[in-house]
Image 1 (tube, rainbow, N blue to C red):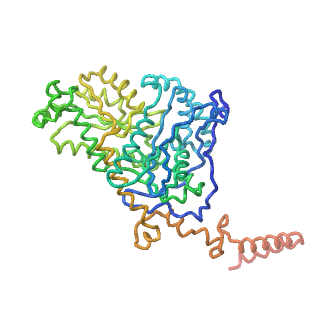
Image 2: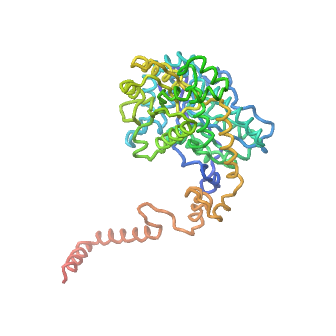
Image 3: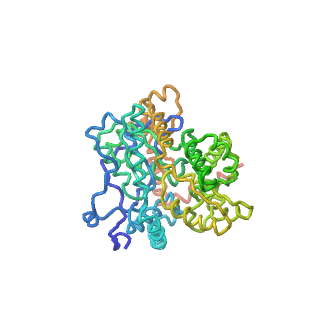
Length: 504
């Protein structure tokens, strides 16, 4: 039923191109401060893709970008994002893709083979409620449309800064999948690639999951492996991003949600005197940062930097607001927890009533880890949490919009890409000669340590640490022992050894 369900979806691995031996793979890129090579390979992906019959009846998916005639002289920008269902019928298979990812639900090794079955059960159970949520926001996730618009805006911003680029979109759990975007880049003939996850803060479960899929493709697709690439793993502390966040919060604080209509209109019109006069009243609102949750064990056991980076973002944004003269109280909480395990705390739905008990009446909610609107902002925050807040005693509520196409935000992404470009120009050999810090994996790929075994310069690694000569000698000793035992001499030898052992 999992493979050929009524929806026509099946579990399958991405299409494979000719395999590149690991010993022959050159390093993906030279890491720079804030830009590192792609991480370790992941186990085979088990995303749901349409069966052949189902795909034949589906309209062709819109291309992630209009393919240039010749992209060999332009830099490819690959935007990585989560993805979302594009229809109500897509909700269940989207959820299956999500929960079949070991980075989302990590099972103990003895029961890891149940991953897909558990994902199927969870998606079946959660699909009805999720479909109701998507109905509230229009029947589909708007994330893909926003991400494509961000890609176009980024290309324009780079062009204004003198960089010829083409942007591609790769979603982790729904169309367009990563291998679709890679295929388009290869067909366009790009030689250089900047990989930009649209997650400000790095987490194993978001950026890490997408990068693992990407590296899996890297090691299996010779054409993709030849493209020089560099990754921008996180940008939670970039000044442009922080400033863009702070400005959006300021605009909401100075809106009619917290100010008298006339005063808010004057502020919106750019009246600096009105803005200065309004800061005291605007500072009465409590700024409530809500980030997507994460199981606690990711931080405590895996060393995931997500929580620390999220807290750093909040502190930087609030420091910027303080510099502009705002004195709002604030807090950070985490939303969207699933299942019985402990997630990062405090929880958003617990913190809102607690703030009301402390006397908070004005709440300005900031989705800190989201750069585009989707179900977590449009339904979970705007509907569920707003209703909870009003029932708990909040009198004035407003939610800061996601960054979306904010010009300051797009410009910050363009600057991040430009700063990463030198990583495509500096050969790894030169980086090693100059002593530039690089990862151990890059060193291993560069010098191809596995070739020592092929050239018999170093002994092959054997199980239990034995080499071929040792195993040959051990085999001969064993055969001699067997022969002696067969001749009746083995007991005598044992007796002689026992006597020698007692000699003082």
